[in-house]
Amino acid sequence: MQLRVLGSAAGGGFPQWNCNCPNCDGFRRSSIAAQPRTQSSIAVTDNGQDWLLVNASPDVLTQIRANPELQPARAVRDSAIAAVLLMDAQIDHVTGLLMLRERHSPLPLLATPEVLSDLEEGFPITRVLSHYCGVKALPLQPDGGLQDVPGLPGLQVRPVVLSSKPPPYSAFRNHPRPGDNIGLVIENPASQTRVFYAPGLGEVTPFLMELMATCQIVLVDGTFWSDDEMQRFGLSKKTATDMGHLPQSGPLGMIAHLDRLPAGVRKILIHINNTNPILREDSAERALLAGRGIEVAWDGMDLFF
Ligand code: MLT
Ligand code: MN
Ligand code: ZN
Image 1 (cartoon, rainbow, N blue to C red):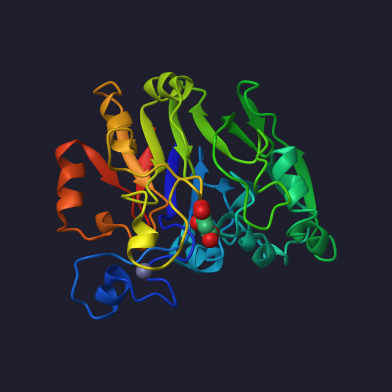
Image 2: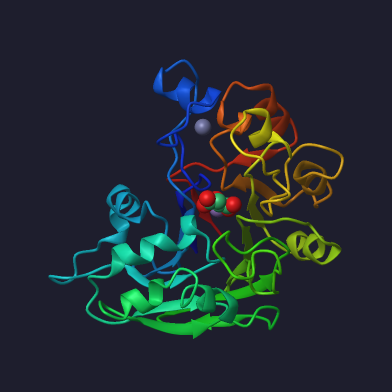
């Protein structure tokens, strides 16, 4: 089983088009050691031919160009993307659906009923797409155990409910529902090895700690280093917590939780905001992560399990 990181940045990407924070400005001036990153998406395959796209990033066309495996050229119109699965209805995870509209058949789309309803009403992408390829909605039932993925028989997924926030445009922004945000266990049925993927994670519950301890790799929310990161740069009034993201630092932060996982679990941060100091390869924060065996995902990173 192969997992390819297509986009390791949070919404906006890195550098972000209108941002001159020390990271974005430093990257443009070549004064910092950092890699550019596209917006949040991964792809998974068990046969190297057919892939499940997890999140459809606004950068999906760039990501397809950067990953030739996604265009196997078996027919005059072709794609290796067999289905799309969404973790939530955030702009950085769904806008790429519009870029896939030239398909000749409805796009198989796995998402919770809550996410499908936001995409029908608040940001009506599926209604718009009905005038192009259309979607074949395949509702995910979180916390119901392992599910098959149509078209990808060698792969099973287990969606789990997470505490986070629906998008700002959602009618439910201030009244989150279970199913607005999911994490995903991706399992190789042959070896029963598992990856846990959760790019937006507001709270690590005891249930999630137990679940992550059963996985070989955890790929989790690396959005912000500190809760007031956006405020300190004068970029937003919102804290990480307001946005549904658990910051990495602090006694109750993501690092403290990852530290408690069994030694064999590979720990990787993903969905990294452009303000986060861990993007700088020579930063003290990056050294702190390395000292604890925590990796930072990059575009093109491959994980085999
Ligand atoms: C988030 O996860 O909070 C998003 O990256 C925000 C956005 O896309 O604007
Ligand atoms: Mn996001
Ligand atoms: Zn920035």
